[in-house]
Length: 354
Ligand SMILES: *Cc1c(COP(=O)(O)O)cnc(C)c1O
Image 1 (cartoon, rainbow, N blue to C red):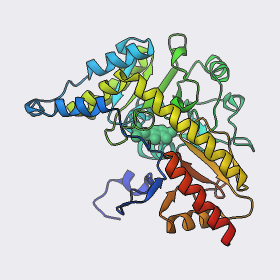
Image 2: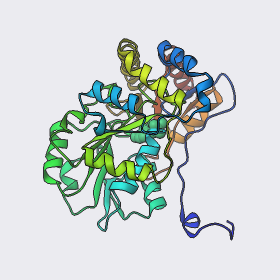
Image 3: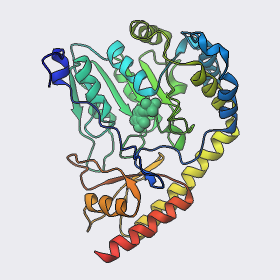
């Protein structure tokens, strides 16, 4: 607390990111990073961009990258907005498109950054409970609103809503923007990007942090009708005109140019996920179906917090949210097969020794 703070700062409840431990050799399964490095082509592109041109500002519109992303998804460049991580893109989305008299709707269990942005931008909001199986029912969102946002597949539950249901929601909700945060879509979800040309109220947000192994580079984007993108650009150009640096642009372009590597690493993560889910079910865990690079699981006889502590002592970190409804669950990011095997061995020891 400081008397020098602006009023709004006193009222904020900031997001708490998953721990980034300083200890080496931990098996880190707590923040949904990709266990595989970025494509070698990305590293080469960044090395090549590391030159004297860094004295110059980057292209404020990241036009080349936007063109590459647009082409990849069959859209026009003016339907793409890029930012320094999807968190930054989302922040601009909240301010530019979701702040209205009526409340913004999002699930009670979802990405915990959404209520944080509402606090920062003083946005009226209302949480809509997922059902008892943690499924999102689009019918629950057919009420007066100033916008709708959810992650699909959802985090931290991993559950996926079909495109038919999203299309129904878009049709029934044409007066406000529906934002689909597809941070995990490449691991088995259905992208709504194909609906963009038909629904001017749809905005889809992606990140390169998870499926393209670039959490450290900080690149995300939004795809939607050019009018929505124009609104985002007005906010961006009132905040930071050069959000993507030259290295980030070079790396991001190269990531989209290495489709084979992308598909291969996503497949590997999904295969490991299915094996881990099977192994954990054999240990008695209830594992929610996942279309992401993490699984969400609970054990009927062991407290999640204690399992997390026990794993930590074996050098493995997973995420536990001390929140209503999900206090008994652990969110475990998918690592390599080797990391997964270490996790399963550690769980076996823990469950049999207590
Ligand atoms: C990881 C994540 C993000 C943020 O991704 P960055 O681009 O790294 O900021 C956004 N939304 C959801 C649901 C996420 O899980």
